[in-house]
Image (cartoon, rainbow, N blue to C red; front, side, top):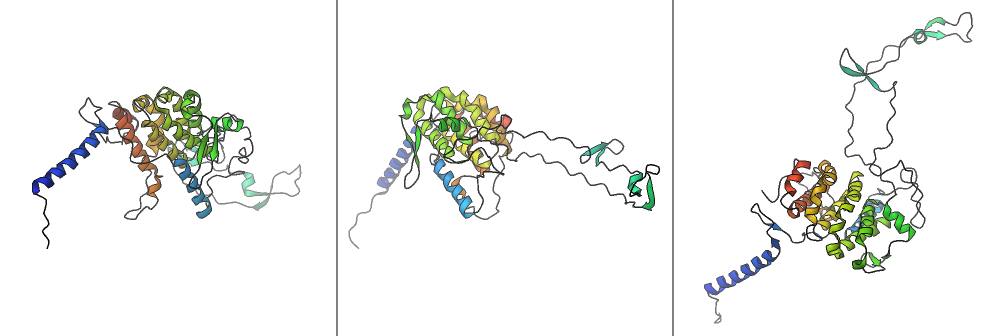
Length: 368
C-alpha cells in the first residue's frame, strides 16, 4: 500500500449535494407550475422521438410485404383502382365514396332475413310456405285440361329452424379510405414546394422555400389531410412534411388549430391501425410544438377522442413473453395511453374532466 489520501466524509457528502442540486435545477427548468389545484406538470419534450415516423413506416411496410408476405397496399380488385402508379395522375373518385364511410346501405331481403315472431318474441328465419308443388311432381309435358301434379310425391321433411346469432357490431372494422386527399390533389398538380431527397440512411424532404416563410393557414391543413394516405410517395411526403412544419412552426401553429380538426377526425374514422398510429404520433408532436396548443385542443376532444375510446384496450396480451417490436411503438393501446396523458398534462385544468367525459375508463396521470 501507498500513502493514498482518502477523501473525507464531509467532502463526499458535499459533492453529492452539489450533484443533487444541479439535477434539481435542471428538472426545475423543465417543469412549470400549471396549477391552481396544487400540482405541477412537466412541460418538457416527450422522451420518445416521433420525427422519424415516415421512414419507420416505410421500413415496416417493407418488412410486412417482403418478409411477412402481407402486402399493405393493393391495387386492382381488392384495392383502389384510381391510384394507378406513382407516376400517373390519380383517377377521379366517385362522390359517394367518402373516407370513414360505412359503405352503401344493405338492401333487406325478405327470403333470407329473419323475421320477428310475436308469439315467441324471437327472431326466426322465414320458411317457404308448403303447397301442392312441394308434394307433387309436375306432369311433363303439362296439359291445359289437367295442370295438376301427378300421383307421385316428393315430400321433403320440415327443416329445423336455424339459430339466430348475434350480429357483429363492426366497431373495429376498417372503413373506406379512398385516394381523394387534398394533399394528393395538390401534389399531383405541382402546387406543393417539396420533393424527396434520397439519402443513404433515410429519405428526407427537400423544401423549395424556407419552411418559416410558408403560409401555415394554407399548407398545414393540406399536409394533415394527407396523413391517411397509404401509398408512397404521398404518405412519406405528407407525414414527414407535417413533422417538418410542426418543428419550425412555433407561433404559427396555434391559429391554425381549428382547421386541423376535420383532417384529424377523418383520418381516425378510417379505423386503419396504421393510419391511427401515425395520427397519434402527430398529435403528440402537435401538443409540444408550441405554447397553449394543448389548451386549444380541449374544445375539440369530442371530435378526436371517440375513436381513441374504441381502440384504448387494443393491446398485445402475450402473458410473460416478450414483444420484441415494442420499440416501434405501434401498439394502439399503449400509444393511446401515452397520447391521453400528454393531452392531460398540456391541456390545463379542464383537460382531465373533458377526457374523462369521452373516455370513462381513463385515469388521471396528474391527480393520482
